[in-house]
Image (tube, rainbow, N blue to C red; front, side):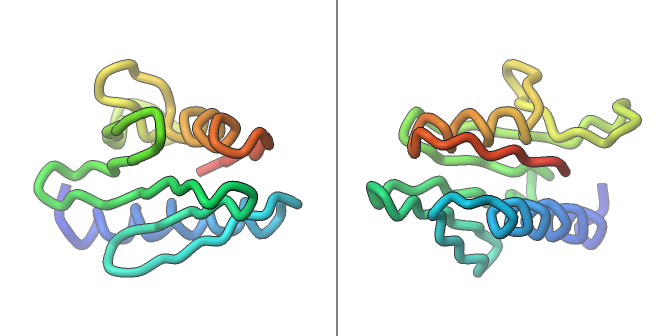
Length: 110
């Protein structure tokens, strides 16, 4: 994948995550800067950090429960980002991580 295309795809994912947060009633602050999207849960000040990794064309997620790598599945018609170890989609994984850290359920679709 070319770097400009990767940047566009990740920008779209990050904007979709921001939109999902805005549409929810959950107290999550977010900051999108320097290629990273930081989600901060106001309830307990815990964070989830998503970062773009140019060299591997991956999105990495750092959460309380660990670090996770996601790569675009080019064989998936929907264009899902999948965990490079488990195959779980990033939207399902991010939803579960948010629930683990905040106790609130938020659905993501990108």
